[in-house]
Length: 209
Image (cartoon, rainbow, N blue to C red; front, top):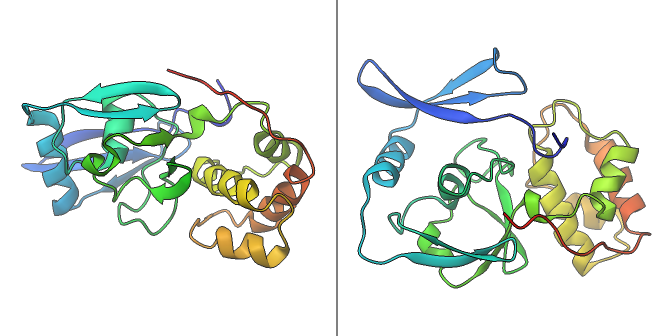
């Protein structure tokens, strides 16, 4: 299993009549229970929706068609419908960056992006970034990851930055990565890895599920 595709996951249960998302941080025995009325409603729509029209968009180079409510967060569709679990559920409010994906090349938070908004667009997840991409290789060489939970989102933001600025300054990096939080405090290693990746040619091609 790739370091960028860990078994961190979530599943849904009903506790005392309330839908709850159970998030695993790093290991199956360490669970954080997260409850939100808004997310519970979205999950309910996702699980029960039977619409007349399919939402069609491209994920990691492959055209995908999904039958879900247009206002379902893209994150749920990627993880539950398409089984691309590399993209993580963090805050659910677009504030931590763990769910970052590229939409038409721009990093965006999939937890607050309605899947209807990506109709006809190109989405790239962490699985779509090649294992030999300079950013992933730099992440390994600099031993950036600690718990690893936020790192897929960090990498997606770093890749987007380097595509625009192959040789970013510290200020460029701090600005581009400011929306990605790391509870382990690996910011110094993240900065070094981005600088290291900036001097290597980009790899092409990734996993196309």
